[in-house]
Length: 245
Ligand code: PEP
Ligand code: MN
Image (cartoon, rainbow, N blue to C red; front, side, top):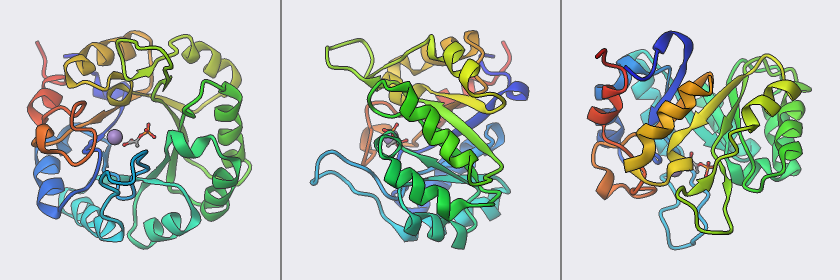
């Protein structure tokens, strides 16, 4: 066993919702090991020709998954329209992506829409390694009386070629906990790794560094995934992180 479920918040599911059948296949295999089932429906892609996400219909699939398996579901948001739609479909958790945390206008918009809400909100670190942008996005959320706030370390843009897709700042854990007290800090092993073959070693690392949980992109057929196909692992590998021995 690598991950002890008792002291970890586990967020897993595909990078993007692609069809109801796809999310259902994945959820059916991993739901017993997770706290939140994730799937993006609006994808912040660099390339205009890349898959942009299925949009609102994906939220209806997540709602069905929530009811069918009795689990919490999660999706990325970047503006108030996204938040309102997530409320309509009873999404339990939303996260701000790295491309959104960099922009205080967007953070403000999301914070206002979530005001006084019990929806969980997780804030990923910004793409650039400016810790203040991250801390202040969190503080902005806190100032809107949002109860369940967490943070996700997904690594930072690397100008030079490194072994990972995004550069982890491992000392960020200590720094982070000094600056921001009492919130969950999750390690997004998939977006740091960028490659399915190194997700496992990052899961180990996250446990050693005492993160409060992990985010792991999991897909039933990673090679065919419409986004982030290189880094997604299959449900069998995902479940192996929890089996004793
Ligand atoms: C994602 O979680 O699929 C995503 C787009 O993440 P990030 O904002 O870390 O790039
Ligand atoms: Mn992704």
